[in-house]
Image (tube, rainbow, N blue to C red; front, side, top):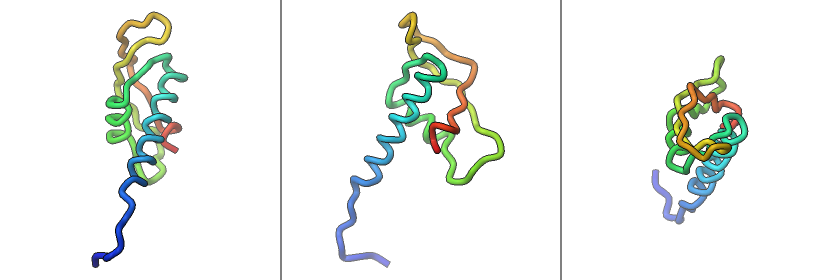
Length: 84
């Protein structure tokens, strides 16, 4: 069924941007790694879940080390708490 009323399309974009920022902040705090918006979106698409998982998912993330400023790839990043 379709509605004749306009639907706000900006609501999802705002929520998605806030989630990207939360992921970027989480990775920076936990791994001393600066990631871009594209990597945050990739993490969100790969690791987000609508239901609570028994064990958090993880993935390899590439970014810039906050101390040295050089590219770095940690073994894995668990982002479950950032997505809650």
